[in-house]
Image 1 (cartoon, rainbow, N blue to C red):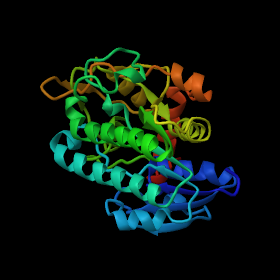
Image 2: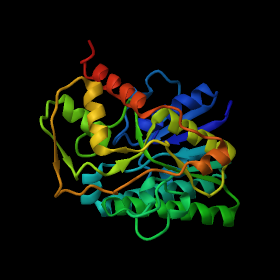
Image 3: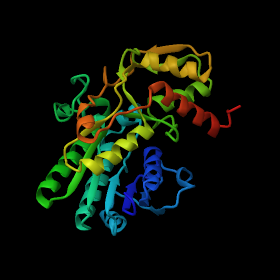
Image 4: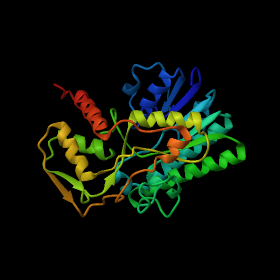
Length: 321
């Protein structure tokens, strides 16, 4: 990556800003394009980058930001938590479809050397093999609570396949699992499960009410592990053949909450609302393909990742002693 011109869309966001840091450490010349709907310039305040504020649903804007770039890593997305995604299926489908489609077409027009499609574990159906291999990605319908988002990501993967075949483009695809770490989104309407739980615990909610019965499982990957996997994917496997990026750990939501409460040092009771949707019953990725193709293994334990996230949250909220 030394002296390569790399565009990171969504680079002011949670995951994107960590990727930008990694690229800068690798010697890349980084440009960030972000509409700042979820991203923050403070995430990039110590980094020497070129920043462009742009709506990447618009093809003309995408053509402008990709001009002169060697590599594009497309992290721009409309994101939300389970409640938001379930309520706004059409919105999630449309915005993500337009971003993905416009960015890849712009990369074709500007003859980009390599392009990374950042897909999602939301492409998988609710009832799939666990651990889940990449071959499950187009079976049935995506998980119903994320169906709009999941279909947009499936279409992005297909577009990558078609563009690679017709135009000879070097395009990689990664499917990240639930990511946690510093700079995550803590907006209660749009945040994912871990930041939402942390905020509610520190806001004094007691008992803390959780959707579902707590028996559903998730697999979390630390953000610094994830961006390392993204970098390895674009360097070693720029093919339209998806790779899961996740951890080998799997945890029940009830145990996750207990662990967050333990690390926060709080005394909080838990109440489950079994009438609310719980999402997929189990989620854990099969990581063997990424290990084989790019040598990727997540090395940060869930407990350490949660500790880092909580420490960061306490610091930014002024709660650190």
